[in-house]
Length: 176
Length: 192
Image 1 (cartoon, rainbow over the protein chains, first blue to last red):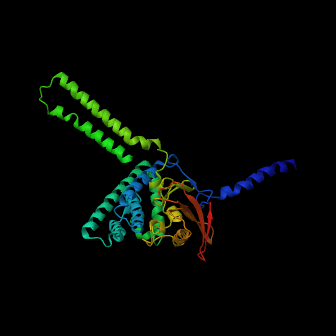
Image 2: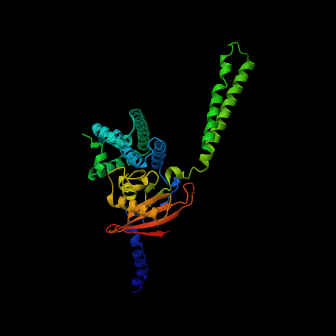
Image 3: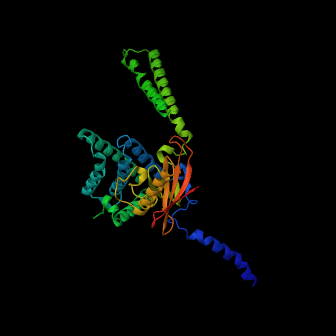
């Protein structure tokens, strides 16, 4: 009897702890769970990516002033640069160059609508220059954390492959 | 301010580069005294360069653990090991870009806080929730709206967290939660 009584607090504690344990890292955040983070809390790899990509985004704003065009282009640049770095560094994947060219051209096209040829060429040049800045950032991320980078590359490949919309920006293929 | 500091660094760099030049152009028969003068010029140049760099970087070092709000927004962690950056609309998991979390929190790149519908791929439900919440927040008179996050709440609702500033140059903001009902398109706002 006494032993049973001593177990009760432990059981109560276990029941109280269950909701916390059940909340996996994948669970969507509630308002109270979403918390601000400082730079010091983030990983080196994240800081590299957001510093480089933030620089690119700021520099592209005066080039492509319509945010409705800049936003999707920026996201596609992030995805393509990441994949190119994965293809260059991770043994399991390579880059399909035809798909890469088609994806980049398709991504830039909306930003060129209505532009004179000179201005359009200048915009293409600047976008490509900034794309390579992003690629440099992705390569630096690999250098900082090779295993984590390639694991994330595998996850990205699988998610883009499984997503009808994501497939439009997929440029990786499994290495032969 | 930062531009001024960078200008100072540039001028210092020019000074350090140019200072020894006349000495190099001088006659080869320089005396020891001349060499001392040149050395002094180089040292002065290096010192000026150092001062310039110090001026240029002092401001940044001071807040090296803080984010520059205009570049990053207010980064937040929606889950363990996940970091999201509102202004770049990207999320990272364990230090690497996460397509899953980026789509989940920010929807596709076509969301309304990029300025309109500029793309076609993405998460339809969350995009719609974000678009409707931002639009109706504007209708309610909220201005300078930044979408902090959007996330599925349950099978019938999404919750979109918004920041609204009275002015684009004001740091302070009001925080709102917009609950969007998928089936009816209804939105309920609550100031947090």
